[in-house]
Length: 307
Image (cartoon, rainbow, N blue to C red; front, side, top):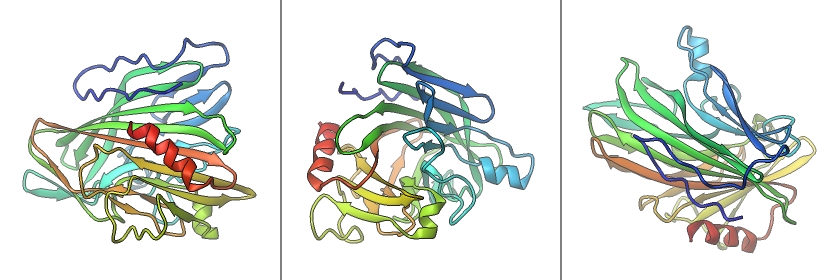
């Protein structure tokens, strides 16, 4: 089934009609208040949205200063993405931020979470069906003095994939950033901004990340507005791959960082959101187990996303 995009709705509830009616073995969304939101396929966790927020100590703040999404192994046993700690602790699962964020004449760092935090507020809407689940949450980007400068409606669709190339999960990140109280400038650099994917800390230890681009000879440090990038990486005895896609509606100048052997990769752009306005962003991440498919398979997946 082709999954239509989730509508971005930063100030109103989202109405989902994406999936077939649920059955006993279908997807389920289960919230553990103050901790996380699990997305399950039957009895297996396929993804976990980390929503904890605790500023009571410096340690707890560090553990909970941003909202991000873990992707799990096909058997649901453990995440294949990285959480807090390890090399570059601020790299966590599927995450979003800009190191040079400015509003109202001041700067904060929504990448390393300096001078601000991302705070989960509530579930806006949810839907679960036989082949996938959709989740919309409200996230406030908050300066340390309590000022909310971005209201984010983070919509994510999780879809089971089954095929011969090992792909098992598709995650659509269809989010909307609303500037609150002042214009918000999103800036940074390819290493420290945008929507990115970080695999397990194990990948930093074995340095196994390898990258594939939409055509031969691409240097992501020189060429902007790439449609997608894929990477493969090793965790224990298992090989995985992930494809990160940027929708054609992403602002121009979108630049991929896709060369680190520890596996953090994704894309960023520079943009300013006018006060009261909304910037919609669309990404798709496909995760698979096994050898990385040929370039043509990734190109076909991107074409389906772009169209």
